[in-house]
Image (cartoon, rainbow, N blue to C red; front, side, top):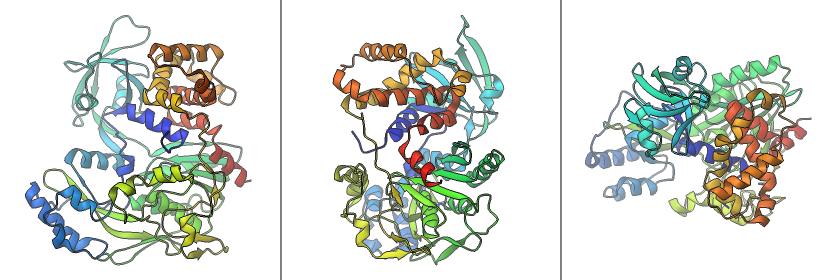
Amino acid sequence: MKPTTRQNLLIALTYSATLIGGMFLGYKFLKDQGFTFQRNVQYADNNAEKVDQIINLINRNYVDEIDADTLSHTEIDSLLHQLDPHSVYLPPAKASEQTEVLEGSFDGIGIEYYILKDTLLVVNVIKDGPAANAGLKLGDKILKIDSVFVSGKKLPREKMIGKIKGRSGTPVQLLIVRAGNNHPSLLTVKRGRVNVSSIDAAYMISNEAGYIRISEFGANTDKDFVESVRTLKTKGMKKLILDLRDNGGGYLTAATGLANQILPENKLIVYTQGKHEPRTDYIATGGGEFEDGKLAVLINENSASASEILAGAVQDLDRGIIIGRRSFGKGLVQEQFPFGDGSALNLTIARYYTPLGRSIQKSYKKGYTAYQNEIDDRFNDGELTEKVLSSKDSLKKNAAFITGSGKKVFAGGGIQPDIYVKMDTTGMNKFYGALLTKKVLVDYVFDVLANRYTADYLEQNLSSFTISDTDYKDFVKFVQGRNIQVDNKQLVAAKPVIYNDLKALLYKYHLGDAGYYKALNLNDSMVKQALSSLQ
């Protein structure tokens, strides 16, 4: 199977099939830290002029020396790939979606839906959003949007997005079927601004330890973090597990803003510098909500950019313990330059450096494709799955930086954790992979299992709840009904993983992201290690 954690597989599967009505699309691995938007400046609006202006922008702003003349006749994508893997051209739609995700709000109705049997099933209604205020509920099925029937039509996902998404203040009519009702009903929802928190979950995971998971560093992440910390403090939090796994980055200012909440006054958080960008230091202001108290930060191979800034500062300043696997290794800062047609250029203008002066950017000398496949190489080399990191670790060939406590840390290739936790691949065989690829687990939960349990029951039985024998037998029948050949040997090997996944997905359906992570974390090896380390 692909080199990814079981948790990441589930997240990718769930969110690739789940769209927030309006919508909230997760371009997690395109979100680079350090964006500044020149909203009042517009450049070319046709491709011929764009190439020339991109060349000029590179010449005036790029982080390193470059012979711009050699690039003048290259197509935009190929041109940018010759620079670095994170300088990228975004078409209008992607540029707009990326901005919406990082800004933490969008114009829409505020739902998540899942395409189940060619029907739009509402799997989450955002609190206080337009849909919630209009009376839309979890489990409703949307048959028609305005004058267009969408259920049973096998419409491309993009067309479904276009039918629901629209300008704030405009109405959309939904024909819905609700469980227990024999006849469809018409519901009018007035589109509005929907705010989405980048905090996926925040809860007390033990008597003294809180757990906060952050999906990306958006415009409001530091404010959301402060609110979460204050709430958890009222419940007795003295220690914190900060989960940055699979967090691909976001705004630099969001990362430094959050760092202000956990680092002592006058400590250097990070600094940036490039050929055309003078050194800029970001200093902690002090007085943060969690400046004291034990801290554990969880990272993995998909923790990038702004996540690495925060983890690097915590590690360099001996503020807490870093647990997990080596982070992605993205230490380049982008600035966004908009074009007249709505497209944009995200151009690398500087590198960022941790408080000790480490650049954690991994090498891209072998080219764009090799860079994109580097995580796969880690899996194939055993770095992600070995019980103990091997001595061949390339980072340790570099000169060591020494923290105040005498700990050795290294530059290049990401943040190396203080405590390594290998990827758990138990049960992740070809049969299990087929279940994920064909969305069988999610389909079974949303189509069958969700109707057998209530949110109250699940919430009251979090620790003890498990999938019943009847549920499991029905699941096997469900798999067979999807024309999937059941390999009994692989099914037995994957059974514990399947049980865990079905439970987590069931909790997600009834209790949202917070419920999902509460269920998933019960058997999460990194979380267990963090709890042990915080004792």
